[in-house]
Length: 360
Image 1 (tube, rainbow, N blue to C red):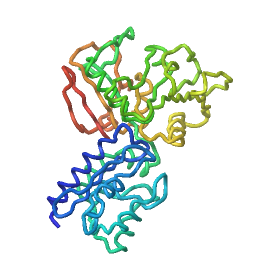
Image 2 (image 1 turned 90 degrees about the vertical axis):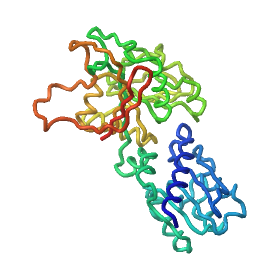
Image 3 (image 1 turned 30 degrees about the vertical axis):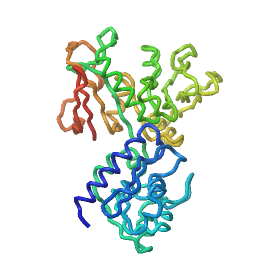
Image 4 (image 1 turned 90 degrees about the horizontal axis):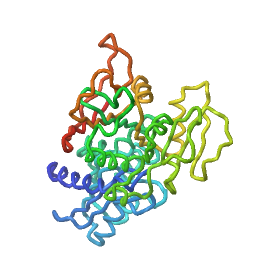
């Protein structure tokens, strides 16, 4: 067993898995490669929920060459019946000799069960190859299973001095057209886009994925969730004119208002933290990758309650001045001990802007 060879092939599974990033949700991204006599004899990636798993595709392509081969996969193979049969049984059936896995599956239905079953069948299992990369690829999936909370990304387009609009509210456009196209890509990776009625009424946005290179990969558009405590939205807004997209309206008002079959009005309790209610209810509906596009009021609440997992900044090299509106909405912090910390994950130039990804 050569660790460099294992890393080489495991890295290939990660690249394969990434091909499903716009279509695989709610399942994790998984790629698989079968190697025999130093040659790849089968490979595949999981494309969408209900379709064949990566391991099954790779095994089918390898055919009789699976006997005494090595399977590389970035996530522990499934061991339970869902929409497809357990991959672990296929691996055993096809007499694969060794399995190299990036990391275990955090889902309690699978968690280490497949690894134990493979070993009991006499198959050699190597765990934790490129573990950090494997976790990063499915960071939202891991976060959801480990915390029972959705993974929350807040996106902001802002000036060099941290402003999102002029004092009169004008904000179109601070960032470049290229940055706004990249936002479409980030939206396409999410399960649901979260905003507020204030933002919807101010900008009348579509908040969907329109860029063809991303939208054509989608099984469906991300759902849209709107916090509208006073239920002040009306059916003439752009968000209600996108067919077949599910919209979730969160409100504290009692209402019989009807926006159409694709709109669900969800009543929030006034006695419980409304943000926690929103995220719990979204998770109940299968949403664990939340992409926030809103003004500073919601962003401020999320930051102060330490609910932001990822801060995605599109920074334009413009100065808008101290009277313009700040993105964080946070009041003056007087002690450094009270600061809110993030780590820089990566920085990418886009035209004349910078895309900065910060993580907790």
